Length: 376
Image (cartoon, rainbow, N blue to C red):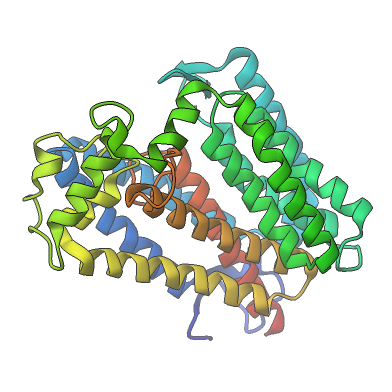
């Protein structure tokens, strides 16, 4: 038995059918995700004004997400590859349903209400896009040709376009990046990289033309938040105050004034990173970032050890997507990036995002765990 996995065997000395013979859990991934989730509940308790009910709801969400993680981690990657086109098409259909009959909240039409739960199909697409890109390149020689690259661009640009119509520019960009990273892992010639770079730069004026007023305001606020301190620049200014006042060691748990006096907006979701900085200081932020980087590094290690193109591209794409989550959230809270509404993984309050992230981590565990079992 390897140090990185536990097998709860149900009988027999050889493992020929992992789904039937036992449950495989990747220990490093398990410990890291649970540690981040526990830290998230501790911070959330302070961010919401010491509300036990809010922490209970978050713990319940993580329980559901953890169950999804366990289930997904036991699915054979070969079976995932067979299901990928169907799951991708179903999620595309859900995105179209959102535009036709979605639930409006906060000025955006992003949710589907099925009675028992309300969820965002756009979050699911963050996993579906890397899976579809990996599926497309599985039986094809690498690096992709120009014609193949056109198909790959359509795979992640079309769902990103549907998400941008909700409107949800932040999630649309994350979906495009998740597909883009997976394509880069497949290998690209310098000529193709140059063409893509030129197309990206050329699309900026077009993107600016079609952006909504509040989205343009976010970009301008990023460049100069002090120009509107009580309006568009208020969020980032208060976030910087919270981070700066925390210093090296922080003010202590439950002692954050920016959060408790309700100066800090969205303190339980998008800006919870600032609450950590105020109460636990730079050292607390570094500890959380180390946990995140370990999880990303574990995912890249799994990608390097994967036994097929599909598994390698999928594991690498999901790992880099998780890194983008952390990078964008911490960047927007510290003022290094525009505010785009990206949650802090496993820490920010929210259900769909947490379940999706844990499903992605479950895919990583499945790729590595099944490799170990098949090798044995």
